[in-house]
Length: 378
Ligand code: ST9
Ligand code: ZN
Ligand code: ZN
Image (cartoon, rainbow, N blue to C red):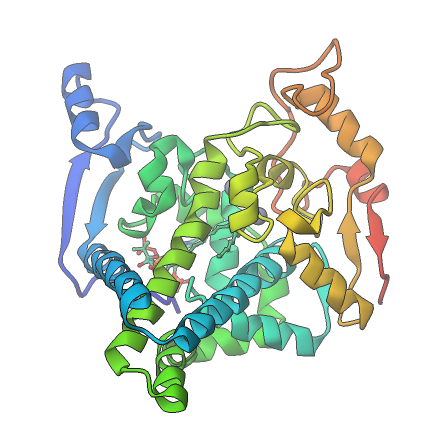
């Protein structure tokens, strides 16, 4: 099931086929098409590829952003302070569900979690409505494996807007689907928590992301339903935009200390806003590190603090990280020299297969042998 905004199929709604981005077009026509279409900066390798706008999503995102502005206005002028505290709490839980759950646990397998923690993370991730775990992970693994190509669902080579939110308003490039089919998802298919969430997502998601967050302020402190609703819309839209910055800003602005040949960057501001997910150059090079950063600095990495806290009671275990000498060696070979000095014979390109995380068949043997594992469980 694809949990699109209003159901499993977008075909029920009005769609518009836009310009063909065929490389066979004359160059004058091609540059005109590029000017018209910010989504089409990078020409497709597939001459048949034409992009289709999913108007249902365009309208939904328009409503969310206008509603979010109104929610902000109500929050400042009229809503009760409890409503604000409640909104912030939901946003924090939902963020942890994405970062600690969908991202570091399920997508990258950078640690393991006992079932009670997996259930908590699944509930939190459902509150975030960023698609169910299975779909989120599939898109994210494809993003890591085929970064900066047409098979990358939010390919940053197609511009800021596309990688930020435009990718959710058009049909996927066929390469995403064909190359995505090569990604191993068997671990998620075996996890009952993931399977159960996927099956019930159509009920769980609206309840946990919209209905409950709106109902609680009305019932417990007599908030006006309209205020509670628009504050809920604001919380959701803001959380989406902060998440999307990891795909847009953290693929464009910042340093590349570990691999200079890929678009992901290390970005302090995204790191703080996105609960520790802004160390994106490091993360793309070492996606199996549970800290998603070289340094486990809690000030910019609240998610690491959360995982460490659950490691103390044994619910999070097999926390994987990368030895400093491996990090240094890689940075010297392919980094931009901003954190570690580049070796004299440093390469311009990494020559390394991109990998999606722990368990990817292309993981270098040295990285597997030299992995550091904390709080060993099984
Ligand atoms: C959202 C996700 O916002 C955000 C993800 C961000 C990730 C960031 C990661 C960074 C780290 C984490 C940072 C967190 C920070 C948090 C801080 C918070 C304060 N492989 O998709 P469909 C196949 S979601 C293989 O419909 P279309 C598959 O067979 C926002 N196969 O494609 C599939 O069928 P099924 C809310 C694939 O028709 C079939 O194709 N959600 C793959 O082109 C159809 O798939 C929305 O807005 C693949 N990768 O439609 C929903 N993909 O699923 C928006 C597809 O049954 N989405 N297949 O197996 C849609 O409406 C549609 O997906 C579409 C494309 C229109 C975009
Ligand atoms: Zn990742
Ligand atoms: Zn990325």
